[in-house]
Length: 75
Image 1 (cartoon, rainbow, N blue to C red):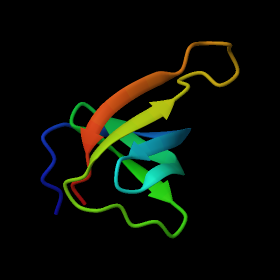
Image 2 (cartoon, rainbow, N blue to C red):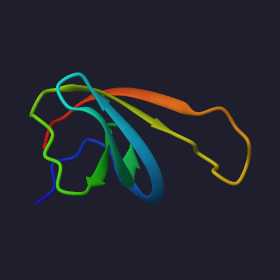
Image 3 (cartoon, rainbow, N blue to C red):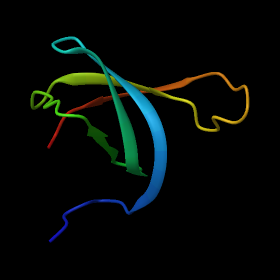
Image 4 (cartoon, helix red, strand yellow):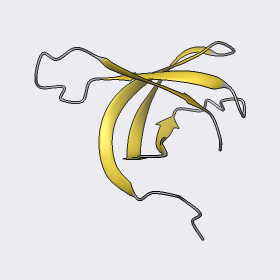
C-alpha cells in the first residue's frame, strides 16, 4: 500500500544525480510528484538520507537550460 502525500505522474526523463558520497550517477526518472521522484539507476544503491541534487532537461528536444532539484534519498 502506498503512503504518498501527493500523486505521482509517469515520466521518462534522463537525469544526473549528484551525491557528495557517491559522485555523479546517471539515471532515469520514471515518476514525479510534489513530494518527490523515483529514479532508476544501473546497479547503484544510494545511501539512505543522503542529500542529492538531480539535474535534468524537462524538454530534451528544445535547447532549454538544465533544471536542478535538491532532495534526499528516502528509499
